[in-house]
Image (cartoon, rainbow, N blue to C red; front, side, top):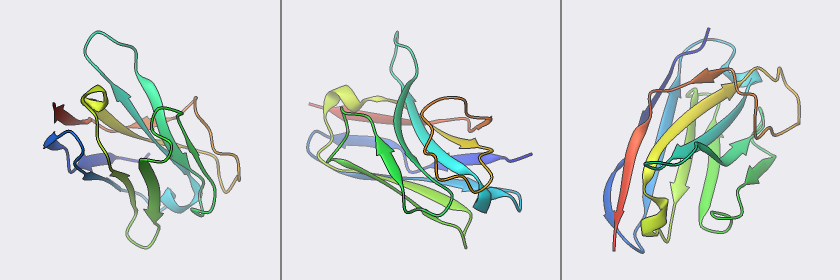
Amino acid sequence: QVQLVESGGGLVQAGGSLRLSCAASGRTFNSYAMGWFRQAPGKEREFVAAVNWSGDRTSYADSVNGRFTISRDNAKNTVYLQMNSLKPEDTAVYYCAADRSYYSDVVPRVGYDYWGQGTQVTVSS
């Protein structure tokens, strides 16, 4: 079992930056792929970014590619999402998720096993 706790959300003006963090419990974090998802009011939850277990493979949604960067620190059991050039349409609750990929180099966009509670990101125009 893995527990995930997100932090770093808040209110920022368009063009600004935020860094989200996701702290994971459990000794198996290092073997899991990790992802970030978001859900805006009235919309389906959507994939944002993901990273494989070692951190050397990443995947991004087209809408954030070039603006967001996902990374992880396995020594700290933490995954990050650096968000730059934020836009009002980035406003959403952001969720961290873990996939029991067990050292696979696949970077999944679906099928995650564990989820955090979410952190609100609001971008004002």
